[in-house]
Length: 94
Image (cartoon, rainbow, N blue to C red; front, top):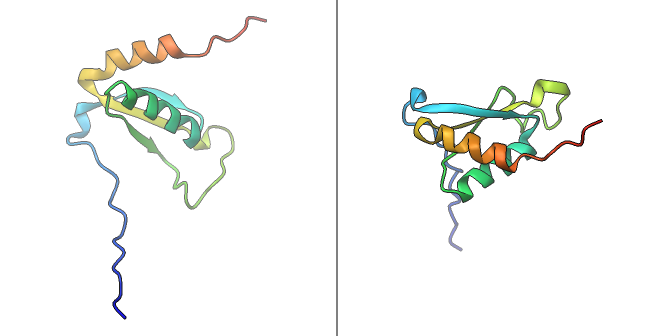
């Protein structure tokens, strides 16, 4: 009986140069960050997620603990901000 090798997942892709990426927004949690990342990537904009928490160790968050920063290449930062502003939900006035 032959065994099968299951490779470890690859490390997350790191920015080529940290100074080449710029933060465009911050969101409350990982779920919201994945939605924003998917949106940006649908428009061809590479996006990276950064947080101070290890989601696998702390699967829940309280308040701003779960905050996730969305980073994009500096050249796409202005376009990303315009896209996010255009698609941001309109909050009803009180």
